Amino acid sequence: MMSVIKNPYFIFSCLIFWFNQFFEKYLGLFIPWVHEYLDDLLAMPVVLGITLQVYRWIHPQKENFRFSKTQVAIGCLYFSFLFEFLLPRWSKIYTADIWDVLAYGIGAVAFYVLINVNSGPRSI
Image (cartoon, rainbow, N blue to C red; front, side, top):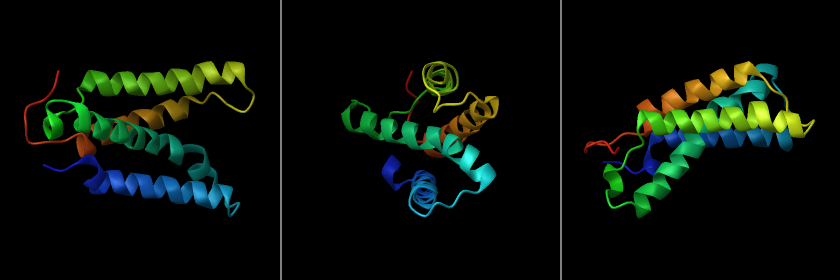
């Protein structure tokens, strides 16, 4: 069994997210499609991965704990609602984009298949 923070897909997601932020914020390098969708694509693997690792530290099942499909879907829906519906209505710095929702969904599936793994029984 592997902890989340040692999972190569989680590490890769975090590194790519960090490099993208570095290039955008410190170097001023913006690649259109990457700038618009990469962070959204990586949001679920990074956020759910960190959350899963914290749960594994505190949950009685430890490394056998795994998010259910429903829990991952709720996380994806939460991000979609917050960042693509609610925040664009409150602030002009946020823009609603249906393609971001698709990116969250793809990221959630990638998280579920590649990071949310163990060899023990699934949690409910």
